Image (cartoon, rainbow, N blue to C red; front, top):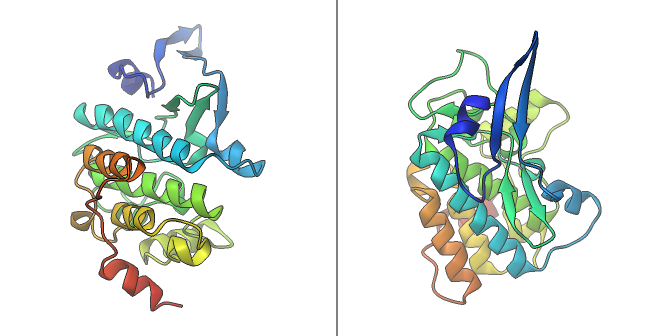
Length: 231
């Protein structure tokens, strides 16, 4: 986290100011964000206005695009790691399990939070920036439905659900979600990486276009129809 944090400099990413050792104790000096993680909004039942929520995720896309440009994958995007201040400014935090693009983790070890993982991450396969696209889409899914996309009574069961791409379409959980916004989520959470947004810039563009009432690139495709047949 220290090494990656010192490489990043973007208003939507947590800043690391210093790092080192005090005797035998390591320390990390990070930016103080006067606000709350999105998870606290969910736990307290405080709904963010829809336009505000979409704008927050567009901010997250911008920050993560910066990280990807520097060949850094976050790998653990979730409501706990998206901090929002009183001015509705979002900061992506916790690069503790991040890795460089092109690197592989320890064989057989799957790190991250299974409820938001892409299928390839849950199966321990090679990852690229599109795994973060998936996890950010899964986080938006939870913010709009108040349910994690992948569920189970233990970590292994949740990993299996993520690997099998076993989740309900957003509007099946919350019919109040606008159809085109559901299409954006399903595009981000497509099972195959090549079917997702190719990068965070494309994801952000559709979010901004949806917020502005313009056409979005995502459409209700075979993904949504396939998911509906799982009822």
